[in-house]
Image (tube, rainbow, N blue to C red; front, side, top):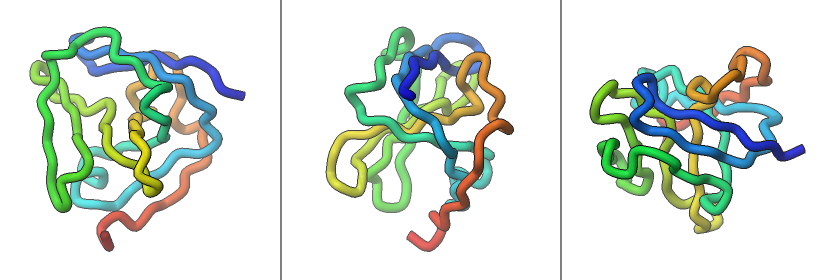
Length: 117
């Protein structure tokens, strides 16, 4: 069942809400995600709302430059990224480690071979 989650960076400069049904999370081994230790869930862009920090994040892109990795300019935490899904629709990847009151260890983890892309 879809529920509303809130989350953001460590210092609170970036905050958001997202509607999601989190069944499992993805651990990607690409050069960025592996170093971050991110556990990701994905939501359609219309189910994501940035509530604070429009100008507080910095955008980082690499490889094919299709994903906007947003990180807080103050504390450096990347709590979400946005780009296009495989079907071309706008999507947001949320680092579940940055969601309020959520135990990331409670989710089943699916490994994704991002370094092969």
